[in-house]
Length: 98
Image (cartoon, rainbow, N blue to C red; front, side, top):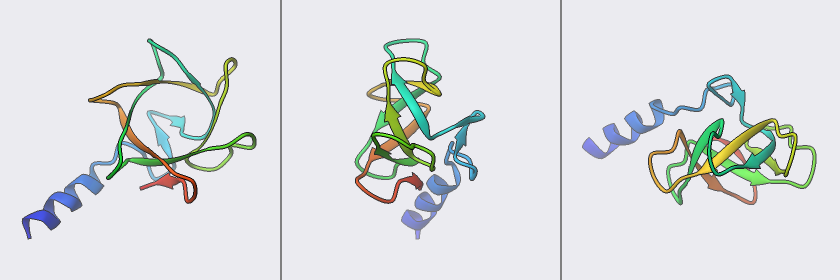
């Protein structure tokens, strides 16, 4: 019973909106990795992510599809080991909000 309550609380506490945004930033498109001053700090996890991310080579136009670029990104991310703004899990299929 307690485990179910913890799981439900974790799911309700997702920082990724139903519209697949974080603080108004759509979580799909062209993404640049930076060392500081990122739009979003991201923690990579193996379970219970806020967002499942699939890397693509082009047409990153659905929730959780990221195309990594070196310039002119839609948003920037900084990978951190803990206390990220959002937690992501890299997947091969079915990207999107968890």
